[in-house]
Length: 168
Image (cartoon, rainbow, N blue to C red; front, side, top):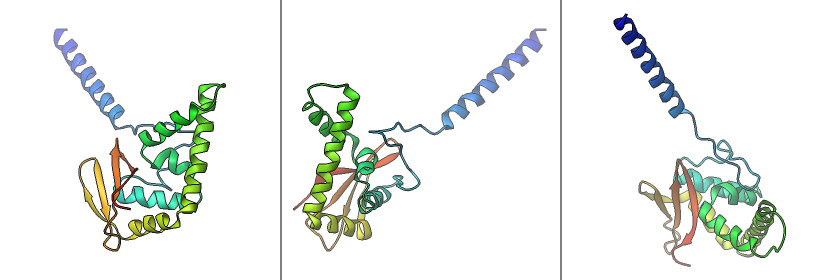
Protein backbone atom coordinates (compact mmCIF):
# COMPACT_ATOMS: atom_id res chain seq x y z
CA UNK A 1 0.00 0.00 0.00
CA UNK A 2 2.80 2.40 0.91
CA UNK A 3 4.59 1.51 -2.31
CA UNK A 4 1.47 2.25 -4.34
CA UNK A 5 1.05 5.61 -2.60
CA UNK A 6 4.69 6.52 -3.35
CA UNK A 7 4.27 5.61 -7.04
CA UNK A 8 1.08 7.67 -7.19
CA UNK A 9 2.75 10.62 -5.49
CA UNK A 10 5.73 10.46 -7.88
CA UNK A 11 3.41 10.35 -10.89
CA UNK A 12 1.49 13.36 -9.58
CA UNK A 13 4.69 15.32 -8.99
CA UNK A 14 5.98 14.54 -12.49
CA UNK A 15 2.65 15.61 -13.97
CA UNK A 16 2.69 18.87 -12.04
CA UNK A 17 6.28 19.51 -13.15
CA UNK A 18 5.29 19.05 -16.80
CA UNK A 19 2.28 21.32 -16.30
CA UNK A 20 4.52 24.02 -14.79
CA UNK A 21 6.87 23.75 -17.76
CA UNK A 22 3.94 24.16 -20.17
CA UNK A 23 2.88 27.32 -18.33
CA UNK A 24 6.39 28.75 -18.57
CA UNK A 25 6.46 28.26 -22.34
CA UNK A 26 3.29 30.26 -22.96
CA UNK A 27 4.06 33.57 -24.65
CA UNK A 28 3.60 36.66 -22.54
CA UNK A 29 0.51 38.63 -23.54
CA UNK A 30 1.60 42.16 -24.36
CA UNK A 31 -1.01 44.60 -23.08
CA UNK A 32 -2.72 47.15 -25.29
CA UNK A 33 -1.18 50.59 -25.16
CA UNK A 34 -3.30 53.62 -25.92
CA UNK A 35 -5.85 51.46 -27.72
CA UNK A 36 -3.34 49.53 -29.87
CA UNK A 37 -2.60 45.83 -29.72
CA UNK A 38 0.96 44.87 -30.54
CA UNK A 39 1.44 43.64 -34.13
CA UNK A 40 4.59 41.51 -34.10
CA UNK A 41 4.00 40.31 -37.66
CA UNK A 42 3.82 43.72 -39.36
CA UNK A 43 6.21 45.44 -36.95
CA UNK A 44 8.70 42.89 -35.54
CA UNK A 45 11.03 43.87 -32.71
CA UNK A 46 13.12 40.77 -32.04
CA UNK A 47 16.36 42.60 -32.86
CA UNK A 48 17.62 46.17 -32.88
CA UNK A 49 17.64 46.14 -36.67
CA UNK A 50 14.05 44.85 -36.87
CA UNK A 51 12.88 47.49 -34.40
CA UNK A 52 14.38 50.33 -36.44
CA UNK A 53 12.94 48.87 -39.65
CA UNK A 54 9.52 48.72 -37.96
CA UNK A 55 9.80 52.36 -36.87
CA UNK A 56 10.55 53.51 -40.43
CA UNK A 57 7.78 51.29 -41.78
CA UNK A 58 5.30 52.79 -39.30
CA UNK A 59 6.30 56.35 -40.19
CA UNK A 60 6.13 55.65 -43.93
CA UNK A 61 2.73 54.01 -43.43
CA UNK A 62 1.48 57.04 -41.49
CA UNK A 63 1.20 54.94 -38.32
CA UNK A 64 2.93 57.30 -35.93
CA UNK A 65 0.25 56.35 -33.41
CA UNK A 66 1.28 52.68 -33.47
CA UNK A 67 4.96 53.65 -33.49
CA UNK A 68 4.54 55.65 -30.28
CA UNK A 69 2.37 53.00 -28.64
CA UNK A 70 4.66 50.02 -29.30
CA UNK A 71 7.96 50.85 -31.05
CA UNK A 72 9.39 53.81 -29.14
CA UNK A 73 10.87 53.47 -25.66
CA UNK A 74 7.77 53.13 -23.43
CA UNK A 75 9.33 55.19 -20.62
CA UNK A 76 9.78 58.14 -23.00
CA UNK A 77 6.19 57.95 -24.29
CA UNK A 78 4.77 57.53 -20.78
CA UNK A 79 6.77 60.55 -19.57
CA UNK A 80 5.21 62.82 -22.22
CA UNK A 81 1.72 61.39 -21.82
CA UNK A 82 1.88 62.04 -18.08
CA UNK A 83 3.08 65.61 -18.65
CA UNK A 84 0.32 66.31 -21.20
CA UNK A 85 -2.35 64.73 -18.99
CA UNK A 86 -1.74 67.48 -16.46
CA UNK A 87 -3.14 70.03 -18.93
CA UNK A 88 -6.61 68.43 -18.74
CA UNK A 89 -8.42 69.66 -15.65
CA UNK A 90 -11.33 67.24 -15.63
CA UNK A 91 -12.26 63.82 -16.88
CA UNK A 92 -11.34 60.24 -16.20
CA UNK A 93 -7.66 59.40 -16.03
CA UNK A 94 -7.85 56.94 -18.94
CA UNK A 95 -9.62 59.53 -21.13
CA UNK A 96 -7.00 62.15 -20.26
CA UNK A 97 -4.25 59.65 -21.14
CA UNK A 98 -5.79 59.06 -24.59
CA UNK A 99 -6.10 62.80 -25.21
CA UNK A 100 -2.51 63.31 -24.10
CA UNK A 101 -1.35 60.45 -26.32
CA UNK A 102 -3.21 61.98 -29.27
CA UNK A 103 -1.39 65.26 -28.65
CA UNK A 104 1.95 63.42 -28.63
CA UNK A 105 1.05 61.72 -31.95
CA UNK A 106 0.19 65.08 -33.55
CA UNK A 107 3.37 66.73 -32.28
CA UNK A 108 5.55 63.82 -33.44
CA UNK A 109 3.90 63.83 -36.88
CA UNK A 110 4.46 67.60 -37.14
CA UNK A 111 8.08 67.14 -36.08
CA UNK A 112 8.81 64.68 -38.88
CA UNK A 113 7.04 66.90 -41.42
CA UNK A 114 9.01 69.95 -40.29
CA UNK A 115 12.36 68.13 -40.36
CA UNK A 116 12.52 65.94 -43.48
CA UNK A 117 16.29 65.57 -43.01
CA UNK A 118 15.64 63.61 -39.80
CA UNK A 119 13.42 61.17 -41.67
CA UNK A 120 15.97 60.78 -44.51
CA UNK A 121 18.67 60.00 -41.97
CA UNK A 122 16.42 57.53 -40.16
CA UNK A 123 15.83 55.75 -43.48
CA UNK A 124 19.60 55.70 -44.12
CA UNK A 125 20.15 54.08 -40.73
CA UNK A 126 17.45 51.55 -41.58
CA UNK A 127 19.24 50.59 -44.82
CA UNK A 128 22.89 50.86 -43.87
CA UNK A 129 23.42 50.79 -40.11
CA UNK A 130 26.23 48.79 -38.60
CA UNK A 131 25.11 47.65 -35.16
CA UNK A 132 27.11 47.42 -31.96
CA UNK A 133 24.95 45.34 -29.63
CA UNK A 134 25.15 44.58 -25.94
CA UNK A 135 22.73 42.39 -24.04
CA UNK A 136 20.01 45.03 -23.73
CA UNK A 137 21.23 48.01 -25.75
CA UNK A 138 22.43 48.68 -29.29
CA UNK A 139 23.81 51.60 -31.26
CA UNK A 140 23.65 51.90 -35.01
CA UNK A 141 26.12 53.89 -37.09
CA UNK A 142 26.23 54.82 -40.76
CA UNK A 143 29.47 55.79 -42.52
CA UNK A 144 27.77 58.56 -44.53
CA UNK A 145 26.42 60.17 -41.32
CA UNK A 146 29.46 59.99 -39.02
CA UNK A 147 28.21 62.51 -36.48
CA UNK A 148 25.07 60.55 -35.56
CA UNK A 149 24.03 57.27 -34.02
CA UNK A 150 20.69 55.66 -33.32
CA UNK A 151 20.08 53.94 -30.03
CA UNK A 152 17.80 51.01 -29.33
CA UNK A 153 17.18 49.25 -26.04
CA UNK A 154 15.71 45.91 -25.13
CA UNK A 155 12.84 45.65 -22.69
CA UNK A 156 11.80 42.08 -22.06
CA UNK A 157 11.95 40.31 -25.42
CA UNK A 158 11.33 43.41 -27.56
CA UNK A 159 13.60 46.20 -28.83
CA UNK A 160 12.53 49.86 -28.76
CA UNK A 161 13.95 52.97 -30.41
CA UNK A 162 15.25 55.43 -27.85
CA UNK A 163 14.73 59.15 -28.21
CA UNK A 164 18.36 60.12 -27.92
CA UNK A 165 20.92 61.07 -30.48
CA UNK A 166 24.60 61.66 -30.75
CA UNK A 167 25.56 64.62 -32.86
CA UNK A 168 23.30 66.98 -34.72
